[in-house]
Length: 238
Length: 309
Image 1: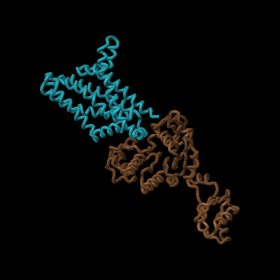
Image 2: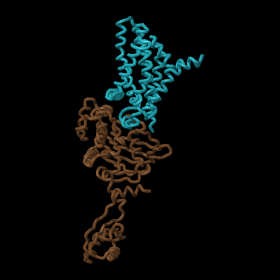
Image 3: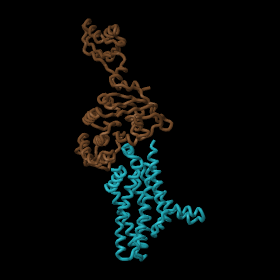
Image 4: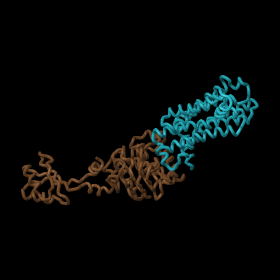
């Protein structure tokens, strides 16, 4: 079996052995369900057979919860010394980083899978745009990949889980809203630049149901860059 | 698989941890690494296992350089790091299966290998417990089990018997000796009797340099110098005994060790033994010789001598 997959399996198992998976799933689904169906601008208020509301909620809940699942990935290994054990086995730095990334992504995918019931429910009561919905889920996955990447990078810098969590949030904040706000304050080249760097720009496009390669590439680039930096940090152990 | 260390050096910032050390370990050899704390033992081991990088020099395993072939060489090495880091939230069996598959043990053999290791390391009663629940001695055994599970040609063990009780220590030592017959083993320890009991060869490192290299016997002999005997002669006047002993031609010096019991420490001149001469002296003078014990230099003394500077 591929070492990346072996590591991914172990980490995923560890999420479910500890309470982390259940708490994250519970909170994520709880928030999503509450704000999508019961409160605020919920689906019934908006009155449209579309999951846009949910995608908007998930945009924020994923932003907050993903650092919580990535924070321990590398930081805890460094703190407890198990990183030495792991890296002296027949695995490469890259396989370790990718394995942990995969585990986090699978956990998020499981969480999103549970929300498919929303999709089914709406499809039964109204005419839902299937393409746009699938596109929205894709957007959430790509968003998750980017934030997991940032989270794992943050975890690779420190051996303190809390620092990893806060750093991930901090970095994510820029991509999440700060660049967007800055884009609004500037015109011309700077405005364009900030807009392109802002995750909200790209996510909104996908949530609307438009698949443009540049949006996909944006998310994949952030993911790839963060994981690469994380790998470099691990390699830099002396 | 042979290990060859060539002029290896490592700096931590401006501090040189390892200073151009060179040595070899052959297949079937168990090498004991001794040295004061901070001497460079663990650093050297971390370089062999490619956990940290080599600043200068090279390490060749089976003829291949760790600098270029690390990925390929790692699967031939079983490593027990200092402090035995473990995933405390995993069950023993799960952990061993994880390590086995990560080290490339074929899927169909994993179950069997894990069972073998559990039995070999005496973990049968604990195998379903989470590692965090085990006592230190059992955690140590798990660490050993994961180092051996893929049957590597090389074992690098950093303080393998720390935390074990005397019975367990004997078991593990026997195990290491058995494994050492076909594998290449480097183990580091502070427990000197352990080194003598388990290792074919000893390397003493101090301040990043090798200060002694040889078998236990040769090292002790080198440091021994002249024969020293502890002598107790009863029912005679201590000053008379002192003078007569000092006059013997084989004796270089006499020290009174215990005035109450007439115990002396007698050092012979180089390459001479005084046991016969002392005995004959006692016969001649009608003294009662109750103790004639040669004192051998202990490894502790060798260690102290080469590392205190």
